[in-house]
Image 1 (cartoon, protein in one colour):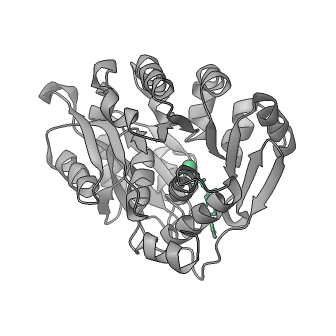
Image 2 (cartoon, rainbow, N blue to C red):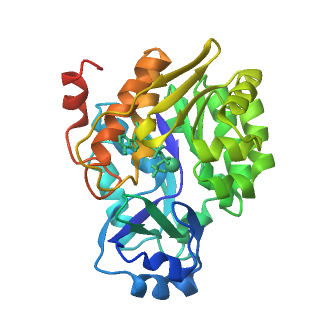
Length: 325
Ligand SMILES: Nc1ncnc2c1ncn2[C@@H]1O[C@H](COP(=O)(O)OP(=O)(O)OP(=O)(O)O)[C@@H](O)[C@H]1O
Ligand SMILES: [Mg+2]
């Protein structure tokens, strides 16, 4: 499996006082910020922990932790954060096709993550070098070997995104790689609805979204209506619904897969990303979508028990114990 997305470092703080509101952020969403705002956002945060992130990069880390062979395409700068991002995927055995931004193209992307007491995450992202991902940075090699090519919806916020995404999708079609898309964020869907719909209609085999994102895509008030739209398009979809689990929409109907029970939810950041790891890896192994979603739930259950969106436990062992691998 190969993923393409915004490479970035997460700068995470526990935000009991909901300081993020003073910065004008909307709870549970992702806002983009410029280089000129970095200092203000960082200074507003309490003590932080910093670790590699990036939505699809997290999912790829999850697949690697499950024992899968995978690759990642993205762009970093030649700086400490870029080095760390690279190390953290490479050390899991992920094959990387990372472009390196020129020194005048900005620093490695970073995401300021505010975790509130209800375990929700609110994010402010500086895209930096990620924003410089160009069509020529997309190479065929990794995609040509992958059963699934996983595209991050956040990529639509990049300046040259459409062309780069088109190239990725064309390579995937040429090499019989399934195209999976994450809708990423409801506001991102609002910003680029036409592009998302075009991609979903013509190119996407597997769609990953949470409830708010799928409603935003089809501009419908209920999930039932969204499922009808999905059925019409003939797209396999997994709609994650937090503690309520995930709805898997196939051509034969919708099946609810419960969330994995966990004792204490600390940080829901990465739940969707890890669900995608298990779901897509399961599909790549030939599992049926409901079994694949069970693996997704198991992986999501691990990530929400600790801070940070990269797995800490041995996902492969967990999955083997649960009889899902
Ligand atoms: N409180 C919870 N308890 C158990 N499982 C949960 C909980 N929250 C999330 N999950 C699991 O995580 C999956 C995805 O979560 P969610 O719907 O929150 O994704 P998301 O909003 O895209 O998250 P993110 O973008 O932060 O990764 C759910 O389908 C479920 O399996
Ligand atoms: Mg998500």
